[in-house]
Amino acid sequence: MAGLQHARIGASLEVASASLAGHRFEKHSHDEFVISANLCGLEDVWLDGRTFQADSGDLTLYNPGQIQGGGVRDGQLWRFASLYLPAAELASSLDLSSVEFDRPLLRSPALGRELAASIEALLASDRFARERGEERLLDFLGRLLAASGTRLPQRADPGRPAVARLQALLAERLAEPPDLDEMAEQVGLSKYHLLRAFKKATGLSPRQWSMQLRTRRALGLLRRGLAVGEVAHALGFADQSHLTRYFTSAYGISPGRYQRAVRG
Image (cartoon, rainbow, N blue to C red; front, side):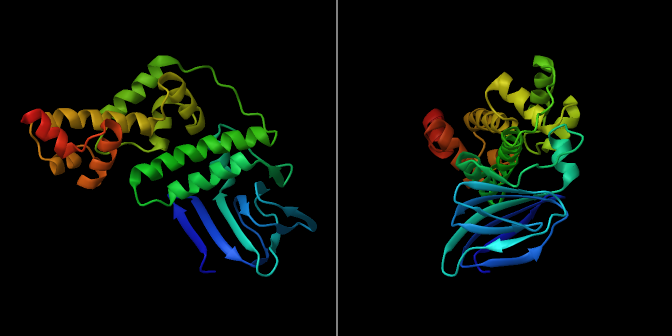
């Protein structure tokens, strides 16, 4: 099982990413939803007494308590990414009272790639990448439920005031930004509807908006002569290299070079 990476993210979310050869799982079950993207290989699936195959590009959707098992033939490469999500967490994130998948197989290579990319981000060492991974995962879940036939509730547009309140909160707490749960509580929306409203108003997710404001604030601090390391600390970057990476990506010049250019 050397090719299986499994991690717990936050209080309730678990993710796995695997690259295995000829592996099979014995029959087992989970308390959570298990949502998996089959990225490579033809998986033989046993689910509650039924059998079917999941090919590359397929998503498998298992409800809590369903008994599952299976794998690929000897020697065959098998890559997949999986999400384990409690029922209450999935429902509340999308502003639903309950969720249940009617069919265990969905053909959607694009959604499969998005799930894999979200999980890769959640497993990253970079905090901002992990936060963006959470946002991407929520967007994925909304698209997944829509594709599987679940109708998501329509909320009235919360309008610019709600988004402005959140922007003010993010600006006030650049060094220690709130998590998505706190953001959603502040504006009275589910996390999914919060992301949709914010992106509709700004074109960015809350994390992206917060990061662009951080790098913009860095410009002013560098012009005032603060050392790059001090700027990184003041704005909540993990370290100087973390600031340098995002600053250079935004402005095409490193913080040090920018400071030397503007201060002579």
